Length: 400
Image (cartoon, rainbow, N blue to C red; front, side, top):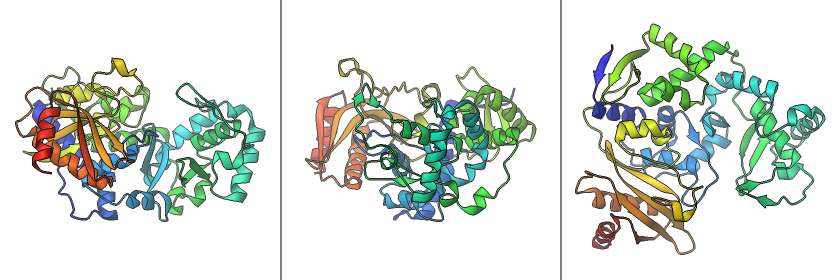
């Protein structure tokens, strides 16, 4: 049946695996960054910038205030430590994962990218590849005909050039050298982006790649079901289930039973089981701790949904809502906006969870003040929506 683990233990294991048991460095360095990335294994990218770009936030949640240039240095300057790819969704991943993604790249070459039919337009694909080879890092806008694109629905209509470049990116024939000021991808040849040692590695057999990805997911989760492990790098169950079985047989994953869970779970053999987690952090909607909503609910008793695409009048908590982690529990949630013109961090709503400790408002006020400073905002304004708003305003006023 496996070792029995209660829910509180499972929470602490999961949070330690994600880096919340690590002591913060007074001044985070590239070494701190590398340690943190080793915990998360991936940083999801999202274009929403109402607070801060998504890929910066998990690092802040774990390291505290840091120089965002660390991430840019790791992503854009040799020797690169991270590279963009479809790892979870669009994400930064450690460069060492490039060989493990070759099976995914091959699949895109065979069937095409879900957003692109360019597999059939090989003349355009070949011409763009040749142009990037000659020009160096280029955006789609640099390479297409320059005609304006209309915005419809939730996003931009992609040009044929953009679709072809995304196809080449998905297949691994192009990599991302960086982003420009408009957050557009700069496409370049993999040999000009990735370290030569990474590109020289042999491509693993598919089964070995699946084991490698599940292993990385298990290290980042600490404790998880097969479905959790599968979701981390967005694998298919036909890939993840044999990989889990192989890792169990090898003794790397230990079958366990978690209180209140009706599915088998697995503990990584090297997972830390701390007696206490002393975290205080705001989690981005795209943080690995809250990616898999069922897992979040089972571990923390915290039902969480992103409401960005929900009409305003139907939202329960707000547009860009961040859970607040205190100790090993999610005790509150706040809808945040960086009002850069006014120089203020705005708390549009603040909601407390049942049985949150008495110190929640004070701890949240301190964390919001630190976040505002990191974002370069001198003000902190709490609007009236939510059951925690009044207490939060009082705490902020008391420490102003």
